[in-house]
Amino acid sequence: MSTDTHPFQTEVRQLLDIVIHAFYSDRELFIRELVSNASDALEKLRLKQLTGAAVYEPERELRISITTDEEKNTLTIADSGIGMTRDEVVEYLGTIAHSGTKKFLEAIKESDGKGDLIGQFGVGFYSSFMAAKEVEVITRSWEPDAAPVKWVSDGQDGYTLSEAPADTKRGTEIIIHLKEEDKEFAQPYRVRHILTRYSNFISFPIDFDGEHLNTVQAIWAKSKSDVKPEEYDEFYQFIAHTETKPLSYMHFSADAPIALNALLFVPETNPENTGFGRCESNVSLYCRRVLIDAKPEGLLPEWLRFLSGVVDSEDLPLNISREMLQDSSIIRKINGIITKRFLKHLEKIAKDDTEKYAEFYAQFSRFLKEGIVTTWEHKEALGKLLRFESTFTDAGQLTSFEEYVSRMKEDQKAIYVLNGPSRAQLENSPYLDALKARGYEVAFLTDNGDQFVIDALSSFDGKPIKAVDRADLDLPEIEGDKETGLDETQSTGLQEWLETLYKGKFEKITLGKRVVSSPAIALQGSDDMGPEVRAYMKAMGQ
Ligand code: ADP
Ligand code: MG
Figure 1: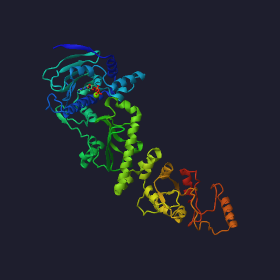
Figure 2: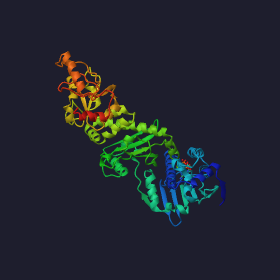
Figure 3: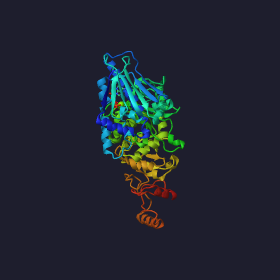
Figure 4: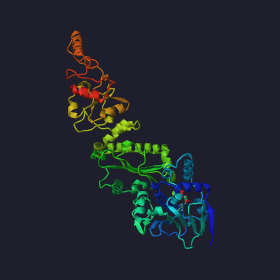
């Protein structure tokens, strides 16, 4: 049996030099990389079989088996996948064959320090040298007459190739001989933990130290019709570590402009109502069922942080994923697509199941409002989702801006709202008089901060939204408007007297047509705003 020695391509040597000095926290990633390679190899074999190719050992089960050996200080990852021929081994495990690693090297050259680039890129097979002093690869290709090959390297200058035993089974076995300081990766407990973190949703069975590792089905990758409602509940309970059921879930896939599978859950209750402060998004990013980032920044807007779930995009190839994450345009695109879909999802619930929407709204309206105030995108869609009571609804009954607009009077130019602590208080407000007299509806906004929401929204369906306690209402005249019961001299006299009386307290005093049932009201200048002003008005008994 002959053994040939081969030098690594220069770039591989450069890469290995970097990999060997990897950050400690990145080291565990090599397991993710090798398991993904095993899964890829199995997927490729399945495809060969599907297309009717005659593969070696057609009956052999498609699975991954991982074993630890603390005595020998090894970790072995084996699969029954596509395997490699001798030529393929030379090409794939001796050169830099894929673009992701090339990009990684370019980025390294550009950055002065090493930075956390390995964690950001994932460097595929070569990452095994983060923890290995020697790597052995024994592989047999799917091709019926291929010869089994053994590849061995210490990650320095090159590798050796020799024949592997003739009875080598189809697939690839990778034996990692761990460095002394990395022996933790031969500890079953540690490895199991890493596997369940990164490789929980691999679609092929994984045996770990002879036992089946309970991987969870990646139901997001299935078509909706193949998933039962209780499977969604179970999946949610698994990823959210809860025993409650989700209030709602959204499962969708898209092909263009980005290939996406997403499964998002709304929890039963608002996690920020428990008094533990701001919650953190629990939506993780996967690439073909392999975890890329459990907390990807910018994947969803902040105001959707109450969601749990998974976003999986094939357009984030594993080993360049983090680099593409940095090139935030793809993340921004995913963010836009998912947010839009989720808003549509809510709109659909609002339309089809008002009761359920009310339940959602009671818990999560704050987040929708935050969305309106903090971002300019999706404002119209968010505005559609707002609910409130109004002068036209019974107490406790909610309506929307859409419904409001459908009820608007012909001469009505704006949507009118009034802010205050409760419906009961607002119902008696003298601000309503002029609107009531014209048959206009007024929306009651009773949430803290609603004024900011309205200011940010500013219009709906092309109609300005106006607070009725502002001065610029511009209402059409109606009969009875001018009947103050005073003649001109009396009017002027009253106005002058009031002006002296309230000097400095009000910007101006006019005798107007706004009030029907009260003698006077305080109005806010159309431009001024701010809680101080409001508080001041309130303190003056409006
Ligand atoms: P990538 O997976 O992105 O292609 P890697 O560095 O992880 O990059 O792997 C390089 C190549 O080596 C793979 O594309 C594949 O052709 C080959 N390879 C690695 N592991 C296996 C395996 N377990 N079975 C078959 N081929 C493999
Ligand atoms: Mg890979």
